[in-house]
Length: 306
Image: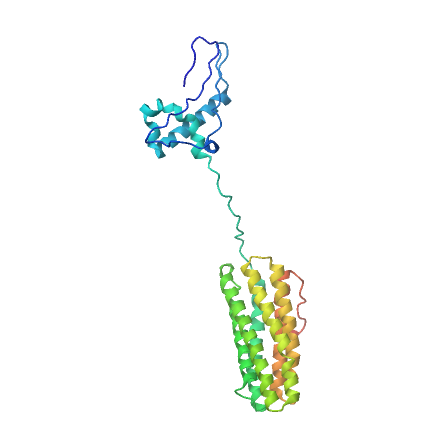
């Protein structure tokens, strides 16, 4: 730092460093820092505290730079150590990449645990009854039986997801089980398409039409269940997750009517439709629990249903 003794007012000016073989030969103008703050000292007035603070900040930056760039301390090439003062910001003020804000809010799916558990158990039972129905229809072992097995597996996945809903840290398990259940229903829809062709070959045209009506609600339920798992994975609001569960329950309700109409004279078919209808009702209740809608509590002995 140099000054003129004859002047009435002193001014601190930076000395431009001289390049050496051990230092960078050229520093781009875009990397050069703003000029060091001037410290004005007069004979009748003390320097301002703001100016002293700014100069001390530059000094602390200089010490940090010397630790990382020892070649800058070469007194032969630079002259004095203090001459690197204006270069401090050339290394410290590097543009940083803006950090991405990540929402780490944990989901509380516990309100949907009990109704979703009941829905899963009822849906699994309806799938088993559908398999029993194929025995009376003389279709056991065919694609309609495979559809019943897929529905049963979907119910098991829903029950497992409901068990994981009790814990805030088990959101990933809930996602996996919901999407696995959706895959089971989607595969069941594919098996129904094969069952339609089988009925056509057997010239069971009335049964073929009934099975064909089951395809659309099955695929709809699979899509809604997949969207519910995706909504949890994407950290969307619980209202969105609950809406997808409600849509899935409505699709299963439509499917229950189609299952009950396969063979009205068979007790297995009627019971399969009833259990599937109860599963849809409980899934809708689970969705409403997440959306915050008020659910009417059963009165009297109606809680014995299911």
